Length: 134
Image 1 (cartoon, helix red, strand yellow):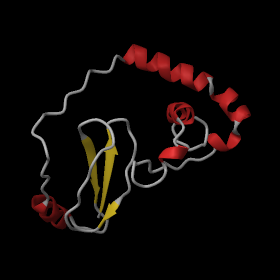
Image 2: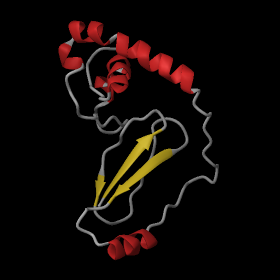
Image 3: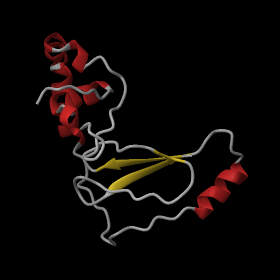
Image 4: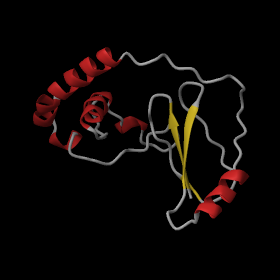
């Protein structure tokens, strides 16, 4: 089993593995997305049993709300970012070649290598990369 916390700005925090109690925090915003993955070798009955034993104790009872996405605006931004891809690849091929998602939390030391340009453009093409660019 793995637990993956994702912050409101879509930064993936260090994974947690196995059962237990985990203290999950965010460096920004007030909420986290929590993704729990179970190994495919569990039977459906085992999965249900594990799910029934899970609990989340939040430090707040404030409900999460989000502004609905304007699909037309989203698509326009996505297409504009994709149009920048040739420029970014030419400037720094290493900034766009990685297909892996970088863990970027305030406590794991990766924050200095987070690149909003590479991440934004990379996200629009389906990957997130890291770089030392500001």
